[in-house]
Image (cartoon, rainbow, N blue to C red; front, side, top):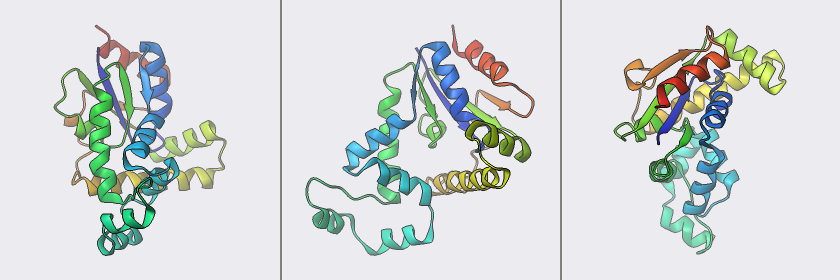
Amino acid sequence: MAVITISRQFGAGGRTLGQIVAEKLNYKFLDDAVIQELSKRIRVTSESIADVEKIAGGLFSKIVSTMISRNYMERLAGERSGYIDEVIYVEKLKEVITDLAKQDNVVLLGRASQFILADTEDTYHFLLIADMAQRIRFMQRQYKLSESKAHQEVLGGEKRRNNLYARMGASNYNNPELYHLVLNMSRLTMEQAEHQIVSLVRP
């Protein structure tokens, strides 16, 4: 019975590896489930959650959060609809990640889960890294993107990652001391990385 968190430099293959590990261990891979649970608790659409994750840390988002109160927006939206900004997102994200981890036998991808669950027993934290060229090539292969589009996706993903951690007051997310294992995907195949994780987690 364990919980696995997989953090990654964007394009290093975290989602793909997480799914492989979950299947190998017969665990649940909880990525979309996080968005769905956030949507339910905040009473907004899954698309609204995804939008906040995309623009987290942006100037417009900060201005809106500062100028408009949550209660006011909820009154405008009505009782059946909620309101979300970055502050609410981070607050509820901590709750959701903590609650989902209680299921055990789960793999959680990103979203600062290595910080939220830092002191949780029977939880293993992994970080995937890779050089920029490797990450661009991976995005090209995995999602059939042009080189320029893959490059844009990697840069955009890294920006969103940086902004989320900044909002949570965490600037040391690449510190290897936070993790049980750091996997350099420029030097490992998916199969080799999966073997390393499974060998560590499986009793």
